[in-house]
Length: 295
Ligand SMILES: [Zn+2]
Image 1 (cartoon, protein in one colour):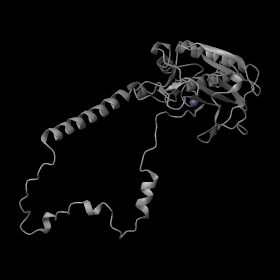
Image 2 (image 1 turned 45 degrees about the horizontal axis):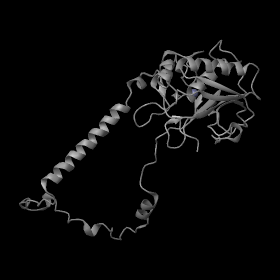
Image 3 (image 1 turned 30 degrees about the vertical axis):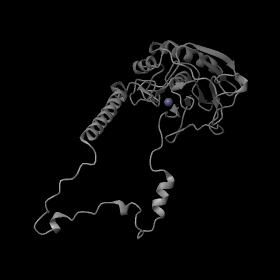
Image 4 (image 1 turned 90 degrees about the horizontal axis):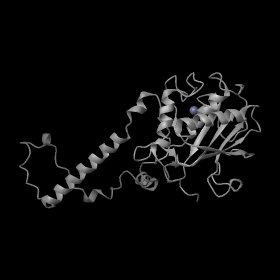
């Protein structure tokens, strides 16, 4: 059970590469081009016998109202920054009961448009018998927790690639349905490695570039995992499939035992209370979104 979901909204920061490189190439004794424009450095007071000379009152370069409005702008910007930090801080995230893979800039969790069905297909070529029933049961539980309807588009022979094409001719002119598939970790293009272990399942939701709405995703179950199909015990295959579906719906791992979204399943064979609250917050009760059009 490992999330490989990408975090939306994160951007690389830092100096543009070329500017940094230019700084490095300048020889140490070469005068910095900005140095000529800098004011002379005043002497340190402890080097001037008799202390500082009286300071000339500095002439204002700008009228008072310009400085005043600039200060107001700075205060407003700092206020907006603090407000956004407060809005993005969710105490519920820190109760270790549920977490979201990412939030948009308004502070809302990334989620599907809950007013349209989530389409999915299943590749059972390498799955143990009974696996399709595990998928259907998991879908039923996720649907009940979110209020979102699901549409089974049938079996597929699609092989999951590392960078899955999210619009495919085989599925028509629409976002590719969620792919649920069984793979051998030794030959799969996606990695099952998780902190030195081999995961029982991995999953990822998909949001198109520039969008905060999940439109597709995939779930890969370890075909070499000996856990049997069913939901009877936490180590059965069913809870693994259910855990991965919750990732596709936008839930991330929590540290607490007693929640299925613990990285190792939390000792659960179904959703815990925190899992259910997280799923409610990405569900139908939160209102419709606009599904981004396919490119
Ligand atoms: Zn996981």
